[in-house]
Length: 216
Image 1 (cartoon, rainbow, N blue to C red):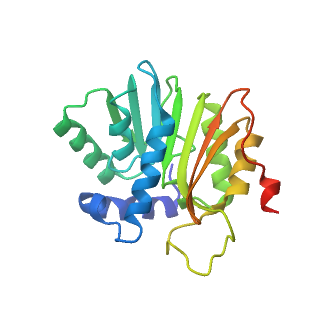
Image 2: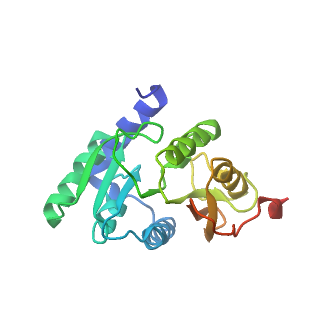
Image 3: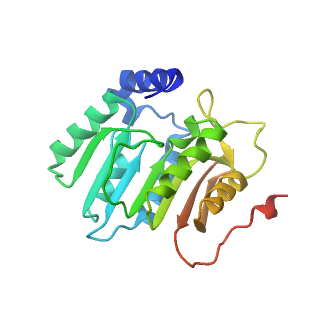
């Protein structure tokens, strides 16, 4: 069950779902789009892969990945966003994608998962719940997790915040630490902006590309 803050968040996004795709202001939208493109590129699903998109929103990432993946599962806490995603899939004639309610720590999906992606959703959780969310993702056993989100490459308290209320960003170092703790190896770090990035984590023998000690 969602706690009160999540219910408020779900209701907020349901109210704006019909115009969400156009809501980003002129400064943030190019950054958001660049981040989404990187998430899609790094996910790189195979034709037989099952891909899980957490915080799918109106399905931007999920629908793009459906072109190459065998099956895509989109999960969100907002019924309004899910309805928009389903409508977009139907309008586009995309049949290998399903959308439904679910959250990071309980995605409401019991099948096998090869790739997990998330774009601009994890930042809604406080740090302790971010760890729990990433632990839950690792428990699903994907070979790859691609995270695009608000994250700080410099100070966690920037003088000019890119985002306002509702964004609880973490430092890149903290996210890498959590990913490493749960068994992932971070194989790529993309800096889109000082406060936005994409992390690629894999369950493999790859050598890590980022050392959190570098930020200290």
